Image (tube, rainbow, N blue to C red; front, side):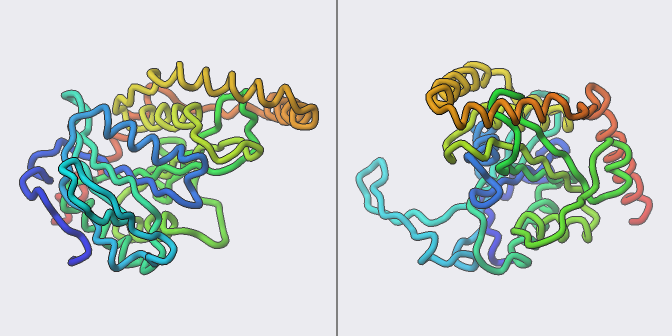
Length: 292
């Protein structure tokens, strides 16, 4: 596919250890930037290299997402376009490697874009895809952000105790991507964190931490989410101070806390979740070999 441009053919399927493709897009489903921040967190802390990108020419309306003129480190003038870069990331021995894509939701040709990512998953040997998202919700800032995990593959959802998809209505490129990969037989999991709807759309390290923690729980891949404890605590202190100055908002937060505390706690599986995922993926590989 011409839209998928490879820059490092050597570091692909043959050199990566059972990789997981992780995808997040800035846009409607990246409230407070929590999802793309999670992917960027992994890219900054693990050993990785760019292996390709998706050509922006086909997928963006540049009157909406304008390129930026800037100067590079050598003082040369250049134009920076919307990016969807693929990074191959090595993890500690024994864990699955990662292929990371953090970019901007495309405006056009979502089916073609999804087919490009399907090709990327095949080219890199990724037998599992995880999409990360964040959406405004009713979780108060004083409580742990809720993370919803779902999967369209019924067998996988049952074995891991995940929800099946339940949303109906207008969707984005992530919805198209899930449909494309599911029809191709590629397991894909959606992780979505809820951020307080009453706060400005500013960075939320507490939500990013919860998203990384849940991703680690599902995949068994270390994310160093605990390093966000300090930034998350500082963020909440700043929000607490701002909320305390507005009686109406403070009362609303108290009502949300009561609703959350009175609702039935969701039981999530812990240490055995990543093991169940590994068992499921081994079964998938065995079936693929038998079919071939």
